[in-house]
Figure (cartoon, rainbow, N blue to C red):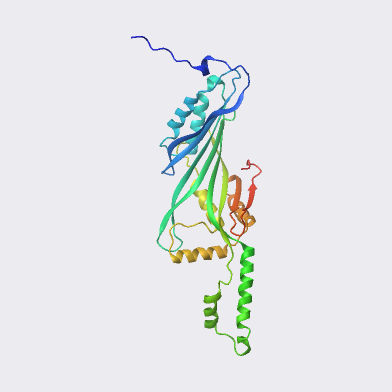
Length: 312
């Protein structure tokens, strides 16, 4: 039996005819099963290294894929675990002079949320994105965690205009009655039950995209160092006051309407609320809010970026 023929390895056996270092080279769109806060999630991963060797034909793509499998597949996502993956990627490319690695993770986290009043509960999804980079010269990973949170926004201007129309309708109806005797509270209540919605303010489903900075050093990275995902989501929803709901009964829908009435907000109000709530808790906060207008075909948007953070 003939000995197997050695397969060519172009990346190792050939040199690049153009001598240039490459900032980043790697793979995008890798699909992996993983765990986030104990919940199974499907990851979409981009991962790359710098190629400092100017004459190297290419990197070891298969090593990136295998390392991603080893460190992420069916494993809990932690700051320490991600830092270890990036260090392993750099180490696997020492022969090419690589000194830095980066990755982007995209997934959705499902969380069970209770109804506002009733005993119902249901599942909500939250888009997650994690950008991480390890520079071996600094011996530290820089991570940015982004979450997306859906909420309801009711326009303050529209609410004021609706109240004026209700006031006008009320005065037009009762002005003659007052000539004889003041209307009773019961009569006013009956009238409001029939005519209180003469105009209603416009609301829309809105979204907040919030990212915060995390860091992980080689001396402190631990596999149990959980990403602060739920703490960030809870802080965003508490600051806005009107997170979208899952399963509801009428009593929950009424409570939600009340929350909207108590939290009238423009995009400017929403982004300022979030900045005030998150700045004391998290580092280098980026915030973008989108109100998908029901009045207009276009959207209203606002953003605040920390001086230490890179904009979206």
